[in-house]
Length: 311
Image (tube, rainbow, N blue to C red; front, side, top):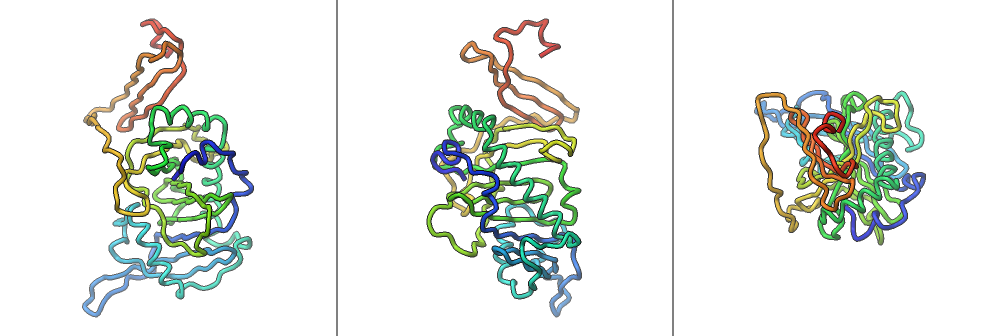
């Protein structure tokens, strides 16, 4: 969430200050055995888990409710699973200090990767390029920074392979009077920025529900070469949350109107609107198969029919 003018209007935090007090939950997707009641009904699915609280790390097995196992879990279920995991903390054993997770540990790589993804998102959001774009977009989309509705950021890419056998990861980092919440699920990174001023609980098992999205805007597209600073990530977006991230209460946001363009055929389309002020910037939409993208591009003030192949 962004409240008021933070972080859009305030000095961005230094990247090396993001590594403050941290809580992290990681749950593997692979199971050990299936729990059954005395009638033979399957009731729970044990999962290997990792928990970090400050400088201390724990690992072990906890019982995941059977209704969330075997692909039946969705993004909206994560806020309910975290408290259940915390209630079974006694089943986890001390692993190591946070700065001494052995490279041989299964948890080492996914934890490093989710941290790199979070830092990449924050570095992008605090860059002049994205800051200027957000400043321009908030005049077109009031929900981006109206002080009331909640927003979250989504990083999409070809990341499933580097998070192999991971059901989900949730992390909360306190830094510079802000709280950076990161959620990984099914190849996507979600980042929520919260107000961190005042007294904060030492252990907070309340994680945001980022499954109720409204309008969205693409902030950046990246090359998918796994070598550039963006790694495997190819798109960064900002989304309006139609529900309060921490509860069922709806905000005043209205359901966006939509028009179905589904087709049995493969479709590629480009739509460029006229400039509203006679300048070079145009609003555009691009359809690539089943996916549609929109944003603003800088073109020449006047476009003729002969220009279309080059545009």
